[in-house]
Image: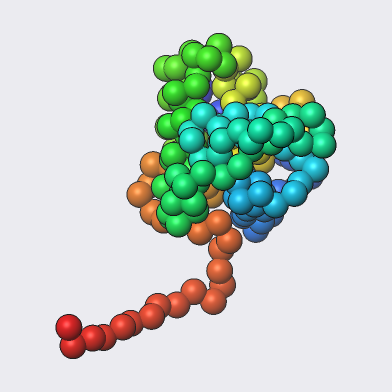
Length: 192
């Protein structure tokens, strides 16, 4: 079977993961990144996310260090502008920065790009085998989990699930970090 569009797991997951769980996970992970960006104190600061925020110019090093000895980062003007963008635009901004950092992270740039497009073609709610992934793509799984694009129950799990943030990468559809059941429209009329 060709794995260029993901290789579905051949066994049933004994820990059922539904789309609602994936949506909740993605929303919470993405919001954690945004909260960190605005300076909300957190115990969990993944180094990959910190590096992305700093290298993208959304945050800059402060003169002091945090309580854990890691450099303290502060939001920049670019970071404030980033917060006003749509979630899809934010996700793509992070992924483009990730692609720029691929060589620094000793990853094959073509493999990184291939996997990002592959994620956009995967089916929401379907579990995929980690076995079909390259070493670079396996490394990416861990980084993309922190952004809410991938759900993997455990780091060593043999399967992963793309979230709605990932499956909408190439669709052109807009995604909200939090799916809303009470979606509606506001129509504004003006004489100007």
